[in-house]
Image (cartoon, rainbow, N blue to C red; front, side):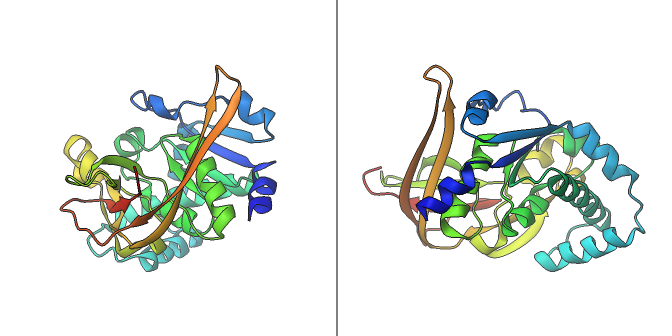
Length: 263
């Protein structure tokens, strides 16, 4: 497993679609430090992706096939057909770009240009990519995508990216994992395609269909985060183990409670 991870990361190619949103300072990274470790980053402006998606006709057979694939991926009865069509076109353009550039993982600008100027959230198509073993991280989080790829190499199974939130009640060894969400469906109980609650209040519910929601399945997990330390000139990471519990929450998106000893 260790050899598989090292071999896979050495020469990895990560795609970066769009620009880091202003509020997401924590996803900053050094492309030069990654390059020094043999990791390449290929970039493309979000406007190029959206322009290509908008040029595809609704009647294109590839679009019709992708619509059927999305509908079969998770229950989506409340999602309008126009949103599914947009998801299908965006998925095709991104998938073509991934193949053309021989990418192992991607990081995509999710907020809020996609919703305001294209009219969907990309979560479900990102979920589908991760499920197909092409990890997809949010907000141009390149080292997040790289972390997902490392976990995938180690396990041979889909990986996910999540926010660590407040401790769960008074239990100091528990925390809440949350996302809006692009979790692969295999990680979720009863996954569904719905709308993205957080952005719906600002850009309109009709522009936020495409979230892949559900509770994370209970069981053991391994977590990892890779970062670049510009001052030290090093790539750093941490790895740990925990367990997703049966605990319940009243929330939305993708979520679970994680227990980590001596956290």
